[in-house]
Structure formats: structure tokens, C-alpha cells
Image (cartoon, rainbow, N blue to C red; front, side, top):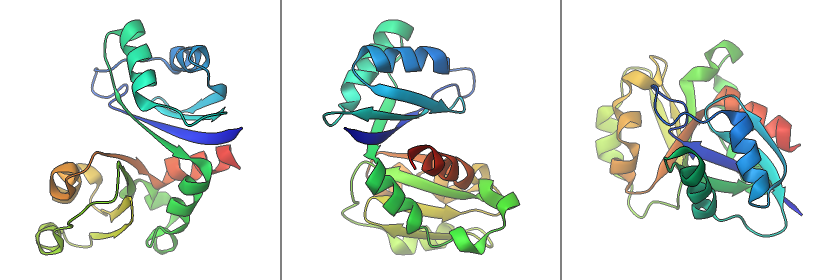
Length: 176
């Protein structure tokens, strides 16, 4: 059995995509996930499964139960740990600034990264880096003010979902 992290996009944000975590766990268990646990209300789950999970299966089950279909990304625990361990900014920030450090999990490695364009959009103190299928962003003024964060899928040309360092750290604890 392998452990996975599920990242659902657009769950319980701005009054849209309302999905209680208890209901999400029930749906996950109905479609074959084992030992499903959630972290906060924004669609983070940890579970075990014999075979590689299919994001469309979970999206379809949520659509059937709640009339909306979120984008879903699954990452196995080993890969999740690697992505977190390679965050180039993690040791540079104080614990109280965790919300300013974001990891964007990408659907796949971007073919072309517009380095000059991204660098031109940087706000003061903002830094970014990428490694394979993850984009790391430190935004000391907050992600909501970041020009890069607001268009990351457009700039990189791949699906993405972000989590802050506090969430990453908690999910790492849950898969340990």
C-alpha cells in the first residue's frame, strides 16, 4: 500500500466549492481510499491506496455528491517529501512568516519557463525558483499581492495548485 497526498483546488474558498472535510473523507473512502485524513478546510488529504489514484475519479464523485468538480492533484508521499526538502527558501524564513512561502505543485514539468518575464514581475523582496514539477515562491508582501502567483498557470503553461509552508509542514508530519 502506498501513501498519497491529495490537493484539491478551489475548495471552500470565497463561498464557492463548499465541501465539508467530513464529506470529502466519506467520498474518498467510498471510492477506495484507505486511512483518509484531512488537514484544514482547503482540500488537503492524506490516504493510502493499493494502486495509483485517478484524479478524475475523485472529481466525478465530488460532482455527484456536491454539484461541482474540483481540480485534483495526487502526489505520492516520497515525491512530496522530495519537493518539500528541495524548497530553496525554507531555511531563510522565520516560522511566523510561513504564509509568505508558497509551493506550487505543477501538473508536470514546464517546457519553457519565461525567466525574464517572471523576474520583471518580482515585487521587492520577492524570490522564486523552480525544480522539476514544483514552483517555489517567497512573497513577503503576501501571495495575494504577487503578480507572479496570480498568473502562474499562464506563465508556466501547466496546471498548478499552491500550499503555504505551514500546510506543507503539516502534511509532511501526516505522511511520516
